[in-house]
Length: 227
Image 1 (cartoon, rainbow, N blue to C red):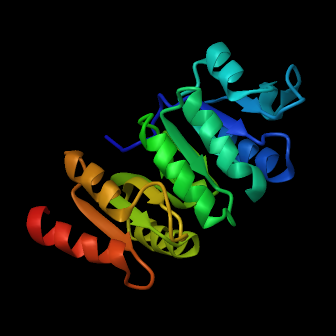
Image 2 (image 1 turned 135 degrees about the horizontal axis):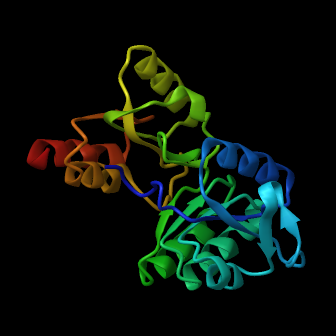
C-alpha cells in the first residue's frame, strides 16, 4: 500500500505552461504519473507537455478529466488563490511546491480548506512519491525504489540524501513525502505518521526534522503513546 498518491492518482498541474511547471510535468510524466490536465488562465484549449490538455480553470479541468490531485507551480502571490480554487473544485489532494507564501495567506487557506476536507501538502515542499506508481513533485524519481519504509521530512535536500542512502542499501520506500519547511503548512509530521501507522504494509518509518519545534514535540508524544 501507500499513502496519498498511487497508480490511481489523476493529476492536474496548475501553472503547467510556466518554465518550472513545464519542466517538472515532463519529469512526472516520464516517471509514469498519470497527468490528465493542466490549468493556466487564458490558455484554455491549448495543449502542453505530453499532449496534456490545458484549461482556464480547475473546475473545468476536473469536470473534463476527473482529476483528483493537483500540484501547484505558480508564483507566490497567486499560490493561495490557486490552492483555494483547487479545493473549491473538489480536488482531494493539493500539493503546493511554491515557496514564499505569506503566513497570513496560509492561515486563511488552512481555515478555508479544512472546511472542505481537502488535504494540502506544502507549501515550500518537494512533494511526494510512491515509488513505481506516482511522483507528484520535484524529487528525483530514479533514486527511489519500492519497499516498506515510510519517509517524511521537512527538508527536500535531506530527503534526497536519505532516500539515496536507503536505496543504495536495498531498503525501499512505500511513500516518501516532504511536508515543507514553512511555519504554517497543510500537513504535519503527526498527520503523516498517523497515515503511516494505518498502512499495514509500512514496517519502518524515517522522520527527518530540522530545528525542534512544536510539531517535533508532538511527534515525541505520539510515538510514546501509540506507535
